[in-house]
Every structure is written in C-alpha cells, then in structure tokens.
Image 1 (tube, one colour):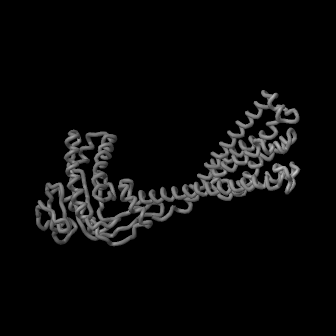
Image 2 (cartoon, rainbow, N blue to C red):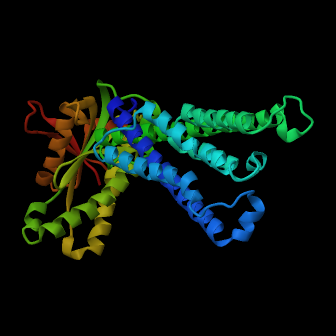
Image 3 (cartoon, one colour):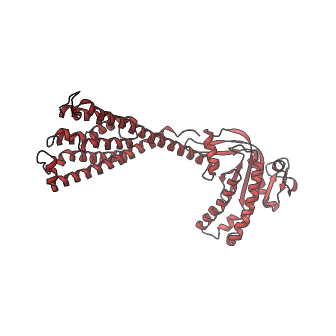
Amino acid sequence: MPDAAPDFFSDALRREIIRSERERMRALAIILAALLALSLGVVNFFPSYTSRIFARDVPGWLPFVGIGPFLLYELGSLTFLGYRASRGLDFPQVARFGNAFIETSLPAAIIVTLSHYMDPLLVFSFWPPLLYFIFILLSTLRLDFWLSVWTGSVAGVQQMVLVLWLLPIEPWGSIPQETLLFHFSRTLVLFTSGLVAGFVANSLRTQFEHSVRAVAARDRVTNLFGQHVSPAVVDRLLATQSEPPSEIRTVCVLFLDIRGFTAMTRRRSAEETVALLNAFFARMIDVVDRNNGIINKFLGDGFLALFGAPLADPAAARNALAAAHAMIDTVGEWNATHPGWALRVGIGIHLGEAVTGTVGSPQRKEYTVIGDTVNLAARLEQLTKEMGAQLLVSQSVLDATSSDGAVDLGPVEIRGYEERVRVWRMA
C-alpha cells in the first residue's frame, strides 16, 4: 500500500518528537532536583566530610549557584514546550540546538564553581565531569542524530576548554593528569559517546517511522475494505505495497439476508437488536474469513461477501459455496442456542466478471464491485423467498464447483433480465 500522506506522517513525527522531548526534560528535571537535594544535604549536614574534600569552607547555599539556575531553566523549558504542544506548535530545530548547548553546560558550571573551593585537578576526578554522560545518554530521546552528536561535541569541547583554563597542562609532562593527551582522550570518549547516542536516536526514530507507516498502511486497508477483513487478508494486501487497481476481473459474489428480521425488531429494543446483529455477524465474519473471502458491505440485516477480490483466487466459487454451507450450519447452531432469536437466512451466489476498484473522495474511499454479476447475486438472494430455499446459485457457480446434490430449478424469470436465468438450489 502507499505510504502515509505526508501531512499525516509529518504531524505524527512532530508529535512524537515533542512527546519524547518532554519526557527527556522531565527526566532531566527530576535528576537535577535529586542532585540539588543531595548536594544541599551533604554540604549542610555533613560538614566534617566536606572539610576533608574542599580546601575552603563551602557555603550551604553553594549548590543553588551551580545547579539551581539549570533546574529553573529546565522547568521553564518544560512548561514552554508544553504550552507550544497544546497549541499544535513544534520545537524549532535552532531552539533545540540552543537548548542542548545550555543544558550540556551544567557540568561546566559546576566544575568552575567547585574549582574555587578545591584543587581543580581533583575537580576533574570528582563526579561533575561524569554528568556529561547523563546529557549524552538522554539526548537519544531527542530522536535526532545530529543533536546527539552536537551534545557529545559540546561536552568534549567544554571539558577540553576547562582543562586548558583551569589546569597547568604540559603537552608532554611527567604527570599524566597534567598532560594534554590524558585529557584529550577523555574528550574523544565524550565525542564518541555522542556518536553512539546519535546512532541509537536515529534507530529509535527509524523504528517510529516504520511503525507510523505500517499503521497508516493498515488503516488504509481498513478504510478501503472495512474492519471485517481477516488479518491474513490484510497482511497479503499490505505485502502488495499498492492500492488495488480498477479492473474487470472474475469474482464470486455472495449475498446473505436474514429473513423477517424487520418484523422481529418490532418486539425488541434497539440495544437488543444491535447486540443480536453484532453477535450473529461475528460468526458470519469468521466463516467468510476461514474461506478466504471478505465482507465488502453490511446491508442492515445482511451483507455482501466477495471471493476472488481484491486478491485473485482460482477457487473463489468453491470457497464461496463452502462458506455458504458453513453459514447455514452456523445458523442451525445459533438457533439451537438462541431459541428466542431463531433466525432464517437466504443466500444467493453468482460467479462472473465485475468492475472492481476504489471509489469515493480523497477523504473517504472504499473498495467496491460493480456490474451485472453483483446484481444477479442479489436477485438470487431475493429469489430464495419465492423458492422457499436457503441457498441458490447460478449456472456459472455450479460449473466451477461440480457440486453434488444440486436441484435444477430450470430457467427462471428474474426481474431486470430479459432472458430467463438457470438457477440451482443447493441441498
């Protein structure tokens, strides 16, 4: 089947990106809030521990300086994004890159802040540089390869700039922690992490795109053929990757009607009537599915079933006749278990050429069959009332099935046909 309409696909992707961005921001806000609470607790309630780590006394409000602004920024961004999402607006790409830069700067702000209270070399061995990996990991939820690469690049560049600014770096010094190669290798790891996160983000986005296209294609099949098409037929239609063409093809058409149903409904409520039809048609749908057919239309208290369309079936007539016999058996089983709702049905089947294709408007299309084959099948179903039969078939159906037990009713005059039509009643 054709891909989803561009507008539908773009809108679905936009909504998924915004949803994923909000999830990422929400997770980051929770992490920042937990980090702020933990830092405040350690600084204010464990002074003996902080005195051993820091060269100077650390004020109890210091965590607010390093983490507080970023937490407020994240909460503000989350609110702003929610506001735009509620109005159907997306998150501009430039703003997303700017947002990634600001968020990823948190570890740098903490490193600079802590460097005033402890040896800068120890700061780079402490936990703040590890925060970069949290931002890189969460960048996968942006569903954008280049945003993840950008996050890893910002982290690597910032870390290297801070090293050159705060540490006495010697390109080939004797102390490993003060050599350029030592810290540059960490920058490479951050950049590589961004690349890996980008591949993961791209994979997630690709999977989502495939899911949207598959759902759109399946919805298109459902719109064309109705929800009463078997999963096996849907899968075969999806495998064709194209819309059923408009063509003249040989099909077997089956009409079923519930006899006297209108009179029965006068004694029942609307809820009971609809519940009855749903339960009965559920069994009929199962019979049609098992015999490789589709129910093309529900006609109040009856339906039109197709065999040999939209998928070619050399055994269309045999399958239609087998389905009709199974329907009659199912009606018998129904009546045995629903004595208060005993039903009688009439079935007409004809095999012949018909025009098939999708008709309707761009907003709503459906697959249909048109032509004399359909009309004659409908007339045969109506003729069952006059003949006192449950199942009538045309000569073409009998020729295609070579069924035993058929009773020749001879050439019969049928409304709308100048010549008489040979009709057979099936046992």
